[in-house]
Length: 328
View (spheres, rainbow, N blue to C red):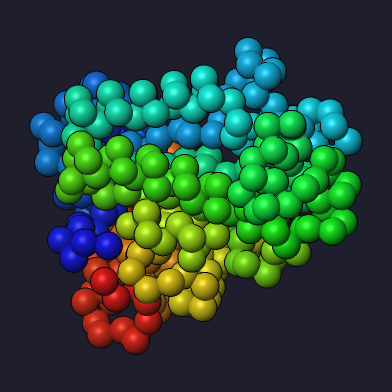
């Protein structure tokens, strides 16, 4: 994490730029939006907002590209109800398209921030009852596992029965290598750009360690590539309590290594309760995002709640904290 990196607050969603003239008045200094949107960049530049891109990595339309569906334990494509994230990481044409899209966008727009999204193995965690499936067991993925680990395995049953720990580590290392690759592209072409990653919001011990075991996200392995970790703290969608974000921040010092910051993204469906709770967290969130947050700025009453929360978080960040949030 560069000490010069800004602390960013604001809405996620291009629609929030309809209120661009008043965002800074209410404490927002950034806006996050999907992909490299020309008009969104122009609006941010005009109104002095940091333009931050949510960049889609491992997600695709499976109806259009069924070849990208990961293979499950039974040798068949995994269950893929909508929504779901995660494509087979052995599909080189898809990976090349993703890199080219990132390179072109970063070179053209030089964004203030790029948040890597869906950089995980397959699944969906924005629900109280996640469908946790092991993947990806296509021939290419198994071959890479064998090559990287020096083992000899031919099927999912053998891997999961005898080498689950090695398989989990391999998945996490593979995701971390992709993160390093994408971050390299960003930093080579926009050195001052903040690199964020949207994260599964579970602590390492939840759902049987599924953040690593299923999704392949490992904070330790990702830390070298990511400036800001952003867990998706969507209270109603996930069946959690309003103080979930605050409690996550309190525990994050136990599993997020020194260096990267932790910045929450909260769902507008949960505003203002989850926001108010998160604003009281110690250590504080390193900035904050409000998903689909345009409506917060439609009325002075809700916009003032946001402004007051931002002021409180900023004051808390300035206070000395004995935790990884303040290490750089």
